[in-house]
Image (tube, rainbow, N blue to C red; front, top):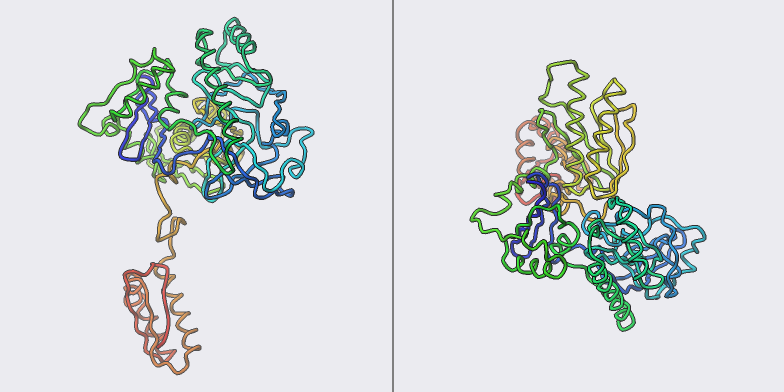
Length: 516
């Protein structure tokens, strides 16, 4: 079995699993109220212009204002005009990486273009502007937006602000590339552009024209809505999760799609009838009694993807620690001792770890800066093998990645494009006890903090004969257990009676010391 798409629906939650050779490779989740915003187009209002950062905050109706960098603003577009686009990577397949990242289909963002005006010359506070979400709100950060609108269809990606035609480099037949370029170039609106996606190969001109007409009509509706609405207001909302996956990932090389919800099954069939009727026979309704994700082994992989420690088949393991700025991955030999030399054992663990790391990055949707601490290898040729393995495995990743050579310290530095909240953060919330730190101060530490606070309170309340301590029961046990000798010594030194109260509702790190 090659590639499968599994769709599970439970109440408001919909989960889509992409399977490769019966192994979970990607998981996407939509819970309705917190669905992704990437690809949505809004009429926003500029609420603040920051010349020092060359950026602006735009109100698009979300809880936090969106962030618009000067390099994501197309001055000609603000004037209602198109402009030429000199794209050095025109053959790049702008098929959507991550979860339908339509706004990323355009030219590279984030750096001011030559001759780019300053932000204060482009925008003023209170100005209304049409923007598209390029990156979902993540953590405490608002969404990132761009004025470069991109609308993906089944076969093409429409770029109304860019005068450019690009062909997917995965279409490698020169004759087919010429045919597609000539047809699209001839039929595109003046001043606008298209990216021809990989699935366009061998499609008829009539099919392509239908897709072009649909996308152009969508853009005209967006423009009409922008003139009739008052900011902030949505102008165009992308398809829901399942239909986006069908549009962007359900191609000829997918063996089948299995849906366990009859209503959703009908929606997919209707969508397929309009966009890809030849693939309808690959869509199946799951009729088993056992939950579908259990039957296909998906639930166990989700549990594994939520763990800090990931075991390798050899007996080694990974430790994955995520922070807001970066992710650190430590490789350990664990139970694996090998049967040859230390160098061979190290190489085998590192090679296995390289494959598992790339798999976990995709599955967990980890983005940003990633540091891997491999087990040290003495031979340069072995380091090169591990690096090549990383490169090959990352080719399977639809997200943009950049990996550097293994350093002399055995570290690998890489970046992976972050568009959405990663899987672990999406499925979990900060621990109410440690508040997301991953650890709490020990009971013994709290005991000695209490002893010092007792001394402060005795100084503040000279007339008090009794001091009271409220602590968590686990701390009270230690005060009356292992630390009881110290407790008695503090009581004698302060010449006060000390009463300890064990309160179950107290946080293990919190305590109260007072006198009546």
